[in-house]
Amino acid sequence: MSNGKANVVGAGPNGLVAAAVLAQNGFDVQVFERNAHPGGAAASGSTLGEGTIVDLGAAAHPFAYGSPAFAHFDLAGHGLQWDFHDYPLAHPLEGAESVFLHQSLDATSRQFPADRKIWRLLHGPLVRNPQEILENATSPLLGIPPHPVLMARLGLRSLPPAKLLAAAAFRTRQAAALFAGSSAHSMLPLAHPFTSGFGVLFGSLGQSWGWPVAHGGTGSIIDALLRVLDGLRVQIHTGHQITSLAQLPDAELTFLDATPRQVVQMAGGQLPPRLRRRFERWRYGTAAFKVDYLLDGPIPWQDARTARAGTVHVIGDAAELAAAEHQVASGKMPDRPFVMVVQPSSADASRAPAGRHVIWSYAHVPQGYAGDAGALIDAQIERFAPGFRDRIVQRVDTSPAQLQAWDPNLVGGDIGGGSLSGTQQFFRPSASLNPYSLGVPGLYLCSSSTPPGGGVHGMAGWHAAHRALRELGRTWADNQLPWLPAMDQRYATTWANRARAAQANSCNKAFD
Image (cartoon, rainbow, N blue to C red; front, top):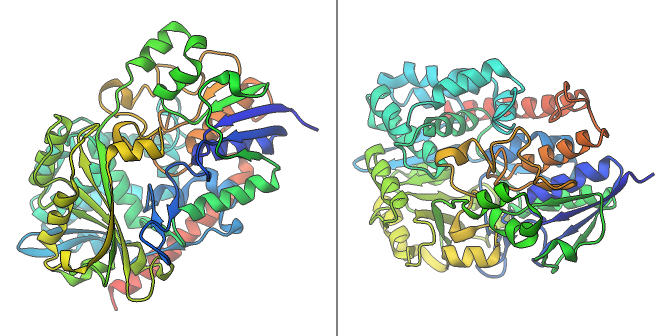
């Protein structure tokens, strides 16, 4: 028997997870997506030619691998497979070997004996409890976290700016660079408070279950979700752009997988005046300028081991990285920007024709940057991999404006749903204990502009849908864990066992 009808606008991971939760709880759900295929920025395509698989948005997935929402819907049982590199992360250095994030705390810390103790102190408790840490990190900040003691440990490590912590805690350039690179995933200046939390979180997940890539491309995550939704009889309408709520069919619940700018367009007249003003003032942050390459071989890194890493942070020392991120936040384009490279085809041969390699990269650039950063990205990679340019067979450059044209949620090239600076880090999108409600009965927000923010994990959709169900009295009581009921513990155990097996395999490789 149907509990009612629900609409979801936007078929990114959050929208699709919200749809799955609602359908599993008896709702007849319709999803409306403007693009020809669901997925939002979690999509793949053959943009580098026949036989290539290019991740059009996100590429490496430490959050997706351990997502409680994805575990609940058993995406692995619906065809999702993960590929692991020998090293989750590499950070090349001038005049020295690259430093690596191993899928092992011991192996990572052995690279810098002078900083081994502090590195282990920072990361140890989190590496030992990756599932619990991720559950904390993907739950709303305003409220009681699922694992309070571990959250307190993460919180204490998160308070200092990453620039300050790296300078005060580390004596080696290797440890400082490795930590600063992970902290830069905040897309904030490293002098900003709480950026250390990103460094500790991303580093800890890498040293536990790694930063895997989805076999066959990020779109495989969406394909698995679509199989779940098909089994739940969810209707998905592609090529259907919603610019006003009036276009939607009548429904008891409506969820918007959109950022505040699109919400104002669709529902501005219905929003409470105070919330509408906040949405109109919503700040979008650091942008991405993306370049995808098809090469006739692996990147010729100076340290050949770097080709065996899934992700490579291309920038140099921690001080150079901090300076570049400060310039970007100030609206200036640095000559040597922070560049993130993912090398999926070295672990997933399906990504490229035989003998070729698909390389995914982007640079941090100012919000709305209208210049061409492609040559700067080339130069940064060439700096640590002489001869890189000679290996380029084909390339596709995508500017911030082009990213937004493809996915309107990527406003000005911001891939995180809004800046994390100021109060927006904690009050996403407003200072409310129910950040998903739009102040209109039955209307909810479930995008990366709500907790827990950006990334491919579906948890904003998970939390928003369960919040709505609780308000209707149709799901677990508020004093239970709404994000992971007891029936899901077996899934969490499955992920933890897989993580331990992957870590043991990585350790064995390290000593071969």
